[in-house]
Image 1 (cartoon, rainbow, N blue to C red):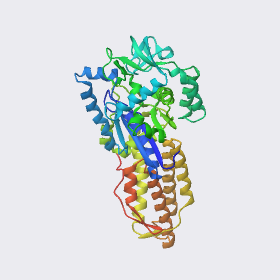
Image 2: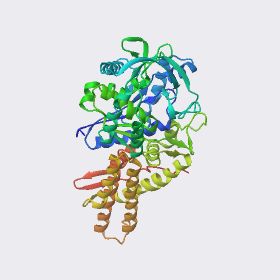
Image 3: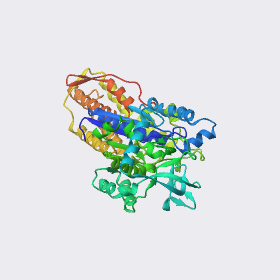
Image 4: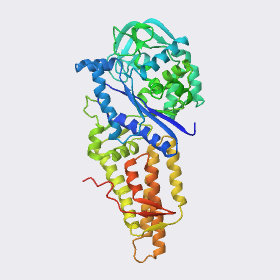
Length: 478
């Protein structure tokens, strides 16, 4: 890894409906990594964006009697507003309808694939899932329906451009097995290797304009538009500054959901190899959020709106729940009951109470000096290790272990006791402020607003601290 640069992306959100909590999870996970590496002094570029082409969007726009551009403009604005809502730190929000920045790179990549002999035209008939924006075969079809969306597939017969995906099966497999392309967690890596062991099939890479008008035109073919994934995946290059920039430093990590791991771990590497471009270094795959044990869906009415959630509880409590309660690489459940339990137990009674007690006692003492505690450094090392292994839930658990340790130390040493000699009281309070300052520093990637509030209450003076009281960080929910 280049010691000074770090490039991280989320997938780009498919703009056919309002933002939901699942995409918020992905954004927050990526934001933790971006903030962490900035904290370490890296030049970080963090990108997200909007995937705005394809059949699903064309149909969604028609359903509300809007032209597709108007439709995606309105929805993309709502996705962009997630940045201030969740206190996110992305550097760029790329839109695939951007004809100045995105389209030229997509068409350049297409011409590179063509020059490699990897694009060819043929007539094809197959079953297409509009929800997945993909043709389905074999195990992906059960009783005539897509296994993902559980909807009837459409039979489409037309002449399309195809990409020789099959040509790159072995090369991609070798890259993954050697960790040149690292896929995390191990379960997702094994799934992709199992897929590769069966051999990849060539895939349709365009659609006839008679069927789909809403897409990027295929170079030198006025009758075809590009397959939405050929268009969307290239955002990682176009939004970053172009092909030369990617050659210089490809993505350090793509943060994506498990439903699109095939596209990122098979089609995307094949496109890059065909175009003679380097592979990303890591693909981190997260799971889904269920609601009350059920998969979220509009039909069930259990979609969680991140705007409503933040309005009710605040950005940091929402970030905390997503990062702590949802296993970083697995599925997790959302319920308001669990949310409020985490809020009251971990934030109000845990961090909030510890910070208030320590700062109230320390604010009476002026400058507190001492030596850093080794036991505190041990907690920091565990947090760092887990962040770098994409285990955000475990990293937060280690931070809370430090808070519990600090609470125990506070109750054991009783620095409020009038019977305690001044020297001991100051020594104990220095230790406690040092622990709280460490907690604050470790929380910067996770709860940036809370970390800043604590940090502002602890002024560094020489080799010591001057503390001041702060307002209640997390008022208890009744």
